[in-house]
Amino acid sequence: MKIAILGSTGSIGTQTLEVVRAYSDELEVTALAAGSNVDLLEKQVREFHPKIAALWSKEKADELRTRLRDMDVRVVSGMEGLLEVATVSDSKVLVTAIVGMIGIRPTLAAIEAGKDIALANKETLVCAGHIIIPIAKEKGVSILPVDSEHSAIFQSLNGERHNKISRILLTASGGPFRGKTRKELENVTVEDALKHPNWSMGQKITIDSATLVNKGLEVMEAKWLFGVEYDDVEVVVQPQSIIHSMVEYEDGAVIAQLGTPDMKLPIQYALFYPNRRYLSGDRLDFSILNQITFEKPDMDTFEGLKLAYEVGREGGSLPTVFNAANEYAVDYFLKGRIAFLEIYEMIKSCLSAHTKIEKPSVEDILNTQSWVEDYIKSRYK
Ligand code: NDP
Ligand code: MG
Image (cartoon, protein in one colour):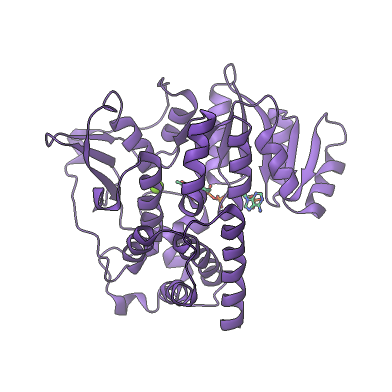
Protein backbone atom coordinates (compact mmCIF):
# COMPACT_ATOMS: atom_id res chain seq x y z
CA MET A 1 0.00 0.00 0.00
CA LYS A 2 1.25 3.45 -0.90
CA ILE A 3 1.13 6.23 1.66
CA ALA A 4 1.94 9.94 1.82
CA ILE A 5 2.98 11.70 5.03
CA LEU A 6 2.52 15.35 6.01
CA GLY A 7 5.00 16.13 8.78
CA SER A 8 7.40 13.24 8.14
CA THR A 9 10.23 14.76 10.21
CA GLY A 10 8.25 15.08 13.46
CA SER A 11 7.49 12.71 16.28
CA ILE A 12 4.53 10.96 14.60
CA GLY A 13 6.09 11.26 11.14
CA THR A 14 9.35 9.52 12.07
CA GLN A 15 7.48 6.80 13.98
CA THR A 16 5.28 6.25 10.91
CA LEU A 17 8.45 5.75 8.89
CA GLU A 18 9.67 3.23 11.50
CA VAL A 19 6.49 1.26 10.82
CA VAL A 20 7.13 1.53 7.06
CA ARG A 21 10.70 0.30 7.61
CA ALA A 22 9.44 -2.70 9.60
CA TYR A 23 6.86 -3.56 6.91
CA SER A 24 8.71 -2.45 3.79
CA ASP A 25 7.29 -5.38 1.83
CA GLU A 26 3.77 -4.01 2.31
CA LEU A 27 4.09 -0.25 2.76
CA GLU A 28 5.60 2.20 0.31
CA VAL A 29 6.08 5.94 0.70
CA THR A 30 5.04 7.99 -2.30
CA ALA A 31 5.26 11.56 -0.94
CA LEU A 32 6.70 13.30 2.12
CA ALA A 33 6.30 16.84 3.49
CA ALA A 34 7.96 18.76 6.31
CA GLY A 35 8.41 22.36 7.44
CA SER A 36 12.09 23.24 7.24
CA ASN A 37 14.16 20.25 8.39
CA VAL A 38 16.14 19.83 5.19
CA ASP A 39 18.73 17.43 6.66
CA LEU A 40 16.25 14.87 7.90
CA LEU A 41 14.00 15.13 4.86
CA GLU A 42 17.00 14.53 2.59
CA LYS A 43 17.84 11.37 4.56
CA GLN A 44 14.23 10.20 4.38
CA VAL A 45 14.08 10.75 0.62
CA ARG A 46 17.29 8.75 0.16
CA GLU A 47 15.94 5.89 2.25
CA PHE A 48 12.27 5.77 1.17
CA HIS A 49 12.38 7.08 -2.42
CA PRO A 50 9.16 9.11 -2.58
CA LYS A 51 8.14 10.68 -5.90
CA ILE A 52 7.48 14.04 -4.24
CA ALA A 53 9.13 15.82 -1.33
CA ALA A 54 7.82 19.11 0.04
CA LEU A 55 9.22 21.70 2.42
CA TRP A 56 7.09 24.61 3.57
CA SER A 57 10.02 27.00 3.30
CA LYS A 58 10.77 27.85 -0.35
CA GLU A 59 14.39 28.59 0.45
CA LYS A 60 14.87 25.21 2.13
CA ALA A 61 13.04 23.48 -0.72
CA ASP A 62 15.50 25.04 -3.18
CA GLU A 63 18.35 23.74 -1.04
CA LEU A 64 16.80 20.27 -0.89
CA ARG A 65 16.34 20.23 -4.68
CA THR A 66 20.02 20.99 -5.15
CA ARG A 67 21.08 18.34 -2.67
CA LEU A 68 18.86 15.73 -4.32
CA ARG A 69 20.00 16.38 -7.90
CA ASP A 70 21.09 12.76 -8.20
CA MET A 71 17.63 11.46 -7.26
CA ASP A 72 14.43 11.11 -9.26
CA VAL A 73 12.23 13.21 -6.96
CA ARG A 74 10.11 16.30 -7.46
CA VAL A 75 10.77 18.91 -4.76
CA VAL A 76 7.96 21.39 -4.06
CA SER A 77 7.18 24.06 -1.44
CA GLY A 78 4.51 26.10 0.34
CA MET A 79 0.80 25.29 0.49
CA GLU A 80 0.88 24.13 -3.13
CA GLY A 81 3.55 21.63 -2.15
CA LEU A 82 1.49 20.33 0.78
CA LEU A 83 -1.55 19.99 -1.49
CA GLU A 84 0.50 18.06 -4.01
CA VAL A 85 1.75 15.65 -1.35
CA ALA A 86 -1.77 15.24 0.05
CA THR A 87 -3.28 14.36 -3.32
CA VAL A 88 -0.41 12.51 -5.05
CA SER A 89 -2.11 10.23 -7.55
CA ASP A 90 -1.04 6.76 -6.43
CA SER A 91 -1.30 7.06 -2.64
CA LYS A 92 -4.11 5.31 -0.81
CA VAL A 93 -3.65 6.88 2.62
CA LEU A 94 -2.50 10.27 3.84
CA VAL A 95 -0.93 10.32 7.30
CA THR A 96 -1.56 13.79 8.75
CA ALA A 97 1.37 14.10 11.14
CA ILE A 98 1.71 17.85 10.64
CA VAL A 99 1.15 20.12 13.63
CA GLY A 100 -1.55 22.81 13.70
CA MET A 101 -4.32 24.30 11.58
CA ILE A 102 -2.04 24.36 8.55
CA GLY A 103 -3.30 20.79 8.05
CA ILE A 104 -6.86 21.83 7.20
CA ARG A 105 -6.52 22.53 3.48
CA PRO A 106 -4.31 19.54 2.60
CA THR A 107 -6.50 17.16 4.63
CA LEU A 108 -9.62 18.37 2.83
CA ALA A 109 -7.90 18.12 -0.54
CA ALA A 110 -6.87 14.53 0.21
CA ILE A 111 -10.43 13.60 1.17
CA GLU A 112 -11.76 15.23 -2.02
CA ALA A 113 -9.24 13.12 -3.93
CA GLY A 114 -10.58 9.97 -2.24
CA LYS A 115 -7.63 9.27 0.07
CA ASP A 116 -8.19 7.60 3.43
CA ILE A 117 -6.81 9.68 6.29
CA ALA A 118 -4.68 8.34 9.15
CA LEU A 119 -5.34 11.32 11.37
CA ALA A 120 -2.89 12.60 13.96
CA ASN A 121 -3.46 16.30 13.23
CA LYS A 122 -6.36 16.84 15.66
CA GLU A 123 -6.34 20.64 15.21
CA THR A 124 -7.86 20.14 11.75
CA LEU A 125 -10.84 18.19 13.08
CA VAL A 126 -11.34 20.58 15.99
CA CYS A 127 -11.68 23.58 13.66
CA ALA A 128 -13.30 21.97 10.63
CA GLY A 129 -14.95 18.74 11.86
CA HIS A 130 -18.34 20.00 10.66
CA ILE A 131 -16.92 20.22 7.12
CA ILE A 132 -14.55 17.25 7.10
CA ILE A 133 -16.83 14.53 8.47
CA PRO A 134 -19.69 15.05 5.97
CA ILE A 135 -17.28 15.28 3.00
CA ALA A 136 -15.49 12.10 4.13
CA LYS A 137 -18.87 10.32 4.30
CA GLU A 138 -19.87 11.60 0.88
CA LYS A 139 -16.56 10.52 -0.66
CA GLY A 140 -16.61 7.16 1.14
CA VAL A 141 -13.17 7.69 2.69
CA SER A 142 -12.19 6.45 6.13
CA ILE A 143 -10.76 8.65 8.83
CA LEU A 144 -8.63 6.37 10.96
CA PRO A 145 -7.50 7.78 14.29
CA VAL A 146 -3.79 7.86 15.16
CA ASP A 147 -4.20 9.74 18.43
CA SER A 148 -3.74 6.98 21.05
CA GLU A 149 -6.98 7.69 22.93
CA HIS A 150 -9.08 7.75 19.78
CA SER A 151 -7.40 4.63 18.48
CA ALA A 152 -8.28 2.96 21.80
CA ILE A 153 -11.92 4.08 21.44
CA PHE A 154 -11.93 2.90 17.83
CA GLN A 155 -10.58 -0.49 18.95
CA SER A 156 -13.15 -0.66 21.75
CA LEU A 157 -15.92 -0.13 19.17
CA ASN A 158 -14.90 -3.16 17.11
CA GLY A 159 -17.93 -5.32 16.42
CA GLU A 160 -20.08 -3.00 18.56
CA ARG A 161 -21.00 -0.34 16.03
CA HIS A 162 -24.69 -1.30 16.15
CA ASN A 163 -24.79 -0.90 19.94
CA LYS A 164 -25.58 2.29 21.78
CA ILE A 165 -22.61 3.99 23.44
CA SER A 166 -23.56 5.41 26.80
CA ARG A 167 -20.22 7.13 27.49
CA ILE A 168 -16.78 7.55 26.04
CA LEU A 169 -14.21 7.53 28.84
CA LEU A 170 -11.26 9.48 27.48
CA THR A 171 -8.19 8.90 29.61
CA ALA A 172 -5.58 11.55 30.42
CA SER A 173 -2.21 11.26 32.11
CA GLY A 174 -2.74 14.66 33.75
CA GLY A 175 0.61 15.84 32.37
CA PRO A 176 3.72 16.96 34.26
CA PHE A 177 1.81 19.36 36.56
CA ARG A 178 -0.92 17.00 37.78
CA GLY A 179 -1.79 17.83 41.40
CA LYS A 180 -0.28 21.30 41.32
CA THR A 181 -2.18 24.37 42.50
CA ARG A 182 -2.65 27.55 40.46
CA LYS A 183 -0.15 29.29 42.71
CA GLU A 184 2.45 26.60 41.99
CA LEU A 185 1.86 26.98 38.24
CA GLU A 186 2.66 30.68 38.24
CA ASN A 187 6.39 30.25 37.82
CA VAL A 188 6.80 26.95 36.00
CA THR A 189 9.37 27.03 33.20
CA VAL A 190 9.30 25.84 29.60
CA GLU A 191 11.69 23.07 30.62
CA ASP A 192 9.32 21.88 33.38
CA ALA A 193 6.38 21.92 30.97
CA LEU A 194 8.28 19.88 28.38
CA LYS A 195 8.84 16.99 30.82
CA HIS A 196 5.93 14.71 30.02
CA PRO A 197 5.73 11.78 32.46
CA ASN A 198 4.87 9.04 29.92
CA TRP A 199 5.10 10.15 26.29
CA SER A 200 7.84 11.67 24.17
CA MET A 201 6.12 13.95 21.62
CA GLY A 202 6.54 17.17 19.65
CA GLN A 203 6.87 20.39 21.68
CA LYS A 204 3.45 21.84 20.90
CA ILE A 205 1.43 18.80 21.99
CA THR A 206 3.68 18.39 25.05
CA ILE A 207 2.78 21.90 26.23
CA ASP A 208 -0.87 21.16 25.38
CA SER A 209 -0.63 18.11 27.64
CA ALA A 210 0.65 20.27 30.49
CA THR A 211 -2.24 22.77 30.13
CA LEU A 212 -4.82 19.99 29.45
CA VAL A 213 -5.68 21.89 26.26
CA ASN A 214 -4.64 18.68 24.50
CA LYS A 215 -7.33 16.75 26.37
CA GLY A 216 -9.81 19.48 25.45
CA LEU A 217 -8.87 19.20 21.77
CA GLU A 218 -9.25 15.42 22.11
CA VAL A 219 -12.76 15.77 23.54
CA MET A 220 -13.71 17.75 20.41
CA GLU A 221 -11.86 15.25 18.21
CA ALA A 222 -13.86 12.40 19.81
CA LYS A 223 -17.13 14.24 19.22
CA TRP A 224 -16.43 14.42 15.49
CA LEU A 225 -14.81 11.02 15.01
CA PHE A 226 -17.45 9.04 16.88
CA GLY A 227 -20.53 11.23 16.37
CA VAL A 228 -21.29 11.67 20.08
CA GLU A 229 -22.48 14.61 22.18
CA TYR A 230 -20.21 16.46 24.61
CA ASP A 231 -22.23 15.11 27.56
CA ASP A 232 -21.23 11.61 26.45
CA VAL A 233 -17.47 12.24 26.62
CA GLU A 234 -15.97 12.07 30.10
CA VAL A 235 -12.32 12.65 30.88
CA VAL A 236 -10.73 10.30 33.42
CA VAL A 237 -7.21 10.91 34.69
CA GLN A 238 -5.21 7.67 34.64
CA PRO A 239 -1.67 8.80 35.42
CA GLN A 240 0.21 5.65 34.34
CA SER A 241 -1.08 5.90 30.70
CA ILE A 242 -1.83 2.17 30.59
CA ILE A 243 -5.52 2.41 29.74
CA HIS A 244 -5.61 4.37 26.49
CA SER A 245 -9.39 5.02 26.66
CA MET A 246 -12.66 3.17 27.15
CA VAL A 247 -16.22 2.90 25.88
CA GLU A 248 -19.19 2.23 28.15
CA TYR A 249 -22.26 0.65 26.56
CA GLU A 250 -25.86 0.90 27.70
CA ASP A 251 -25.73 -2.34 29.66
CA GLY A 252 -22.90 -0.88 31.75
CA ALA A 253 -20.14 -2.95 30.11
CA VAL A 254 -16.89 -1.00 29.73
CA ILE A 255 -14.50 -2.05 26.96
CA ALA A 256 -10.97 -0.64 27.05
CA GLN A 257 -7.68 -0.92 25.20
CA LEU A 258 -4.58 -1.24 27.38
CA GLY A 259 -0.90 -1.37 26.53
CA THR A 260 2.48 0.20 27.18
CA PRO A 261 2.62 3.76 25.84
CA ASP A 262 3.91 3.45 22.25
CA MET A 263 2.51 5.56 19.37
CA LYS A 264 3.61 2.95 16.84
CA LEU A 265 0.67 0.79 17.91
CA PRO A 266 -2.05 3.31 16.93
CA ILE A 267 -0.05 4.29 13.83
CA GLN A 268 0.18 0.76 12.52
CA TYR A 269 -3.37 -0.05 13.59
CA ALA A 270 -4.56 2.83 11.40
CA LEU A 271 -2.40 1.70 8.47
CA PHE A 272 -3.30 -2.00 8.62
CA TYR A 273 -6.87 -1.71 9.89
CA PRO A 274 -8.76 -4.01 10.41
CA ASN A 275 -5.70 -6.21 10.86
CA ARG A 276 -3.20 -6.26 13.69
CA ARG A 277 0.48 -6.76 13.06
CA TYR A 278 3.41 -7.74 15.23
CA LEU A 279 5.00 -4.78 17.01
CA SER A 280 8.24 -5.23 18.94
CA GLY A 281 8.62 -3.63 22.33
CA ASP A 282 7.66 -4.03 25.97
CA ARG A 283 4.48 -5.81 26.92
CA LEU A 284 2.37 -5.07 29.97
CA ASP A 285 3.50 -7.20 32.88
CA PHE A 286 0.59 -7.25 35.30
CA SER A 287 2.68 -8.89 38.02
CA ILE A 288 4.87 -5.80 38.30
CA LEU A 289 2.32 -3.22 37.14
CA ASN A 290 0.77 -3.45 40.59
CA GLN A 291 -1.81 -0.69 40.21
CA ILE A 292 -3.71 1.48 37.79
CA THR A 293 -5.16 4.55 39.48
CA PHE A 294 -7.88 7.01 38.58
CA GLU A 295 -8.65 10.66 39.39
CA LYS A 296 -11.04 13.36 38.31
CA PRO A 297 -9.42 16.07 36.18
CA ASP A 298 -8.89 19.38 37.98
CA MET A 299 -10.67 21.64 35.51
CA ASP A 300 -10.53 24.71 37.77
CA THR A 301 -6.74 24.77 37.80
CA PHE A 302 -6.27 23.40 34.29
CA GLU A 303 -8.84 25.62 32.62
CA GLY A 304 -7.92 24.41 29.14
CA LEU A 305 -10.21 21.41 29.49
CA LYS A 306 -13.15 23.35 30.90
CA LEU A 307 -12.85 25.97 28.15
CA ALA A 308 -12.73 23.26 25.50
CA TYR A 309 -16.04 21.79 26.68
CA GLU A 310 -17.55 25.29 26.64
CA VAL A 311 -16.37 26.21 23.14
CA GLY A 312 -17.19 22.73 21.85
CA ARG A 313 -20.78 23.02 23.08
CA GLU A 314 -21.11 26.54 21.61
CA GLY A 315 -19.60 25.36 18.33
CA GLY A 316 -19.41 27.55 15.21
CA SER A 317 -16.13 29.42 15.00
CA LEU A 318 -15.37 29.20 18.74
CA PRO A 319 -13.32 25.98 18.57
CA THR A 320 -11.24 27.67 15.85
CA VAL A 321 -10.60 30.69 18.07
CA PHE A 322 -9.75 28.41 20.99
CA ASN A 323 -7.37 26.35 18.90
CA ALA A 324 -5.75 29.22 17.00
CA ALA A 325 -5.26 31.28 20.16
CA ASN A 326 -3.70 28.26 21.82
CA GLU A 327 -1.32 27.71 18.88
CA TYR A 328 -0.03 31.29 19.17
CA ALA A 329 0.00 31.19 22.97
CA VAL A 330 2.06 27.99 23.03
CA ASP A 331 4.49 29.53 20.56
CA TYR A 332 4.82 32.62 22.77
CA PHE A 333 5.29 30.45 25.87
CA LEU A 334 7.97 28.33 24.17
CA LYS A 335 9.78 31.53 23.18
CA GLY A 336 9.67 32.74 26.79
CA ARG A 337 7.39 35.69 25.95
CA ILE A 338 4.54 34.76 28.30
CA ALA A 339 4.14 32.74 31.50
CA PHE A 340 2.44 29.36 31.62
CA LEU A 341 -0.88 30.58 33.01
CA GLU A 342 -1.01 33.36 30.43
CA ILE A 343 -1.73 30.67 27.84
CA TYR A 344 -5.24 30.46 29.34
CA GLU A 345 -5.49 34.26 29.54
CA MET A 346 -4.62 34.62 25.88
CA ILE A 347 -7.22 32.04 24.85
CA LYS A 348 -9.92 33.64 27.00
CA SER A 349 -9.12 37.11 25.77
CA CYS A 350 -9.46 36.03 22.11
CA LEU A 351 -12.70 34.18 22.85
CA SER A 352 -14.31 37.19 24.50
CA ALA A 353 -13.28 39.59 21.72
CA HIS A 354 -14.52 37.32 18.91
CA THR A 355 -17.91 37.53 17.21
CA LYS A 356 -19.08 33.99 16.61
CA ILE A 357 -19.72 32.70 13.09
CA GLU A 358 -22.39 30.00 13.15
CA LYS A 359 -21.29 27.57 10.42
CA PRO A 360 -17.85 28.72 9.33
CA SER A 361 -16.65 27.78 5.85
CA VAL A 362 -12.99 26.87 5.33
CA GLU A 363 -12.40 30.47 4.31
CA ASP A 364 -14.13 31.72 7.49
CA ILE A 365 -11.94 29.38 9.56
CA LEU A 366 -8.73 30.64 7.95
CA ASN A 367 -9.92 34.27 8.27
CA THR A 368 -10.70 33.64 11.93
CA GLN A 369 -7.17 32.32 12.39
CA SER A 370 -5.76 35.52 10.83
CA TRP A 371 -8.02 37.60 13.06
CA VAL A 372 -6.68 35.75 16.13
CA GLU A 373 -3.12 36.34 14.95
CA ASP A 374 -3.71 40.09 14.45
CA TYR A 375 -5.54 40.38 17.76
CA ILE A 376 -2.73 38.67 19.68
CA LYS A 377 -0.02 40.68 17.91
CA SER A 378 -1.78 43.95 18.73
CA ARG A 379 -2.20 43.05 22.41
CA TYR A 380 1.04 41.24 23.22
CA LYS A 381 3.86 43.31 21.81
P1 NDP B 1 6.24 17.56 15.77
O1 NDP B 1 6.42 18.97 16.17
O2 NDP B 1 7.15 16.53 16.32
O3 NDP B 1 6.27 17.45 14.18
C1 NDP B 1 5.54 18.31 13.36
C2 NDP B 1 5.80 18.00 11.91
O4 NDP B 1 5.07 18.94 11.10
C3 NDP B 1 7.27 18.13 11.50
O5 NDP B 1 7.54 17.19 10.51
C4 NDP B 1 7.32 19.55 10.94
O6 NDP B 1 8.39 19.75 10.04
C5 NDP B 1 5.99 19.58 10.22
N1 NDP B 1 5.51 20.93 9.94
C6 NDP B 1 5.32 21.95 10.81
N2 NDP B 1 4.89 23.05 10.16
C7 NDP B 1 4.83 22.71 8.85
C8 NDP B 1 4.47 23.40 7.67
N3 NDP B 1 4.09 24.69 7.69
N4 NDP B 1 4.52 22.74 6.49
C9 NDP B 1 4.91 21.44 6.45
N5 NDP B 1 5.25 20.74 7.53
C10 NDP B 1 5.22 21.37 8.70
O7 NDP B 1 4.71 17.20 16.10
P2 NDP B 1 4.08 15.80 16.55
O8 NDP B 1 4.53 14.71 15.66
O9 NDP B 1 4.22 15.65 18.01
O10 NDP B 1 2.54 16.10 16.29
C11 NDP B 1 1.98 16.13 15.00
C12 NDP B 1 0.46 16.08 15.12
O11 NDP B 1 0.09 14.85 15.72
C13 NDP B 1 -0.11 17.17 16.04
O12 NDP B 1 -1.35 17.57 15.54
C14 NDP B 1 -0.30 16.45 17.37
O13 NDP B 1 -1.34 17.01 18.13
C15 NDP B 1 -0.68 15.05 16.90
N6 NDP B 1 -0.37 13.99 17.86
C16 NDP B 1 0.93 13.75 18.23
C17 NDP B 1 1.23 12.74 19.14
C18 NDP B 1 2.64 12.40 19.49
O14 NDP B 1 2.88 11.41 20.17
N7 NDP B 1 3.63 13.16 19.06
C19 NDP B 1 0.15 11.96 19.76
C20 NDP B 1 -1.15 12.27 19.27
C21 NDP B 1 -1.40 13.26 18.37
P3 NDP B 1 9.87 20.30 10.56
O15 NDP B 1 10.45 19.16 11.32
O16 NDP B 1 10.58 20.58 9.31
O17 NDP B 1 9.57 21.49 11.39
MG1 MG C 1 -3.65 11.72 22.62
